[in-house]
Length: 355
Image 1 (tube, rainbow, N blue to C red):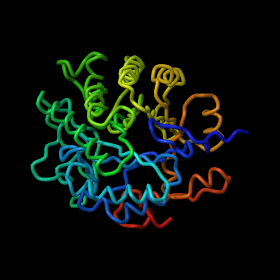
Image 2: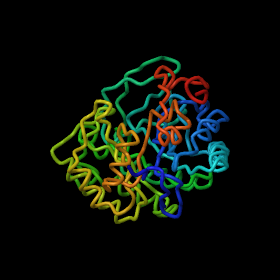
Image 3: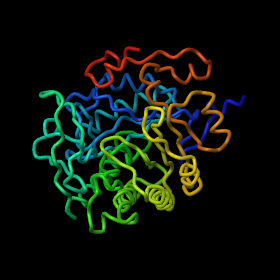
Image 4: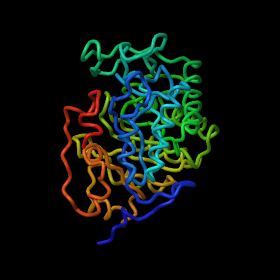
């Protein structure tokens, strides 16, 4: 059997040593919203991946919804990530930042003074969110974004992309998945607008496309990827009758901008609805950049899907939490260490950098 997963591949101007991608995963270790030595150690330990995609990092104060979520909108935050990226590069790795604006998935207790919870429409997500000072809390109704808010949010993504390059990241993944702000515009559960930002497929993809255009203008298309989650069920998202058409059109628009990759989330292995092979094939055919597969992969299935040309790289999530040496284990067939679910989002080294 071929071992395509462990062969090099180019990604824009980067040469990756293998096709194993460490998926972006929320870990909530950024005390004071800056990266620290513990975060540096965590990513450096996993630098054998061909590409690391960081946890979701807020492009602005308004985009920071989770307790201990890192940001990339101040000079101090840029400097803190510079150390992390220097460590990853010294260990032979490559790393993209995932820019994640949480939109309505936010609570005032997790935000900085003066920031606002913004979303396409004034519809609260049907979820609860952890706050360090009050435990689980229901999510408030967000402020419906006006034209100025939308323009500002687009500009914040572009500014954070520039800061990412200043901080030494190799590129940027725009988080358009899992019910966060970009996805909130895509999804009819969170977008009830009747202006040019809502309703039709063309209008609902507009925010995602404008964010991508602004980021491309800021740092170049060969350093920008995007993550999407068709049929995802996270954070109050729902499927609608136009979903296939929407993602096909979005893939086409993003491809025309020259984005370096599209990262398609399929969480069916974790109980979410499956993304049909038909839609995946349409996105694959439409998008001309690299395609990152994801969703409960093991070595055999990864190699089979790469050999079948279903995608170019494969993202692994939870196995990377408890197996910093995941690439070596996948290659040798060694048994994987099981993760400690209780420590996924807790502060400190336990369940983070001590595996």
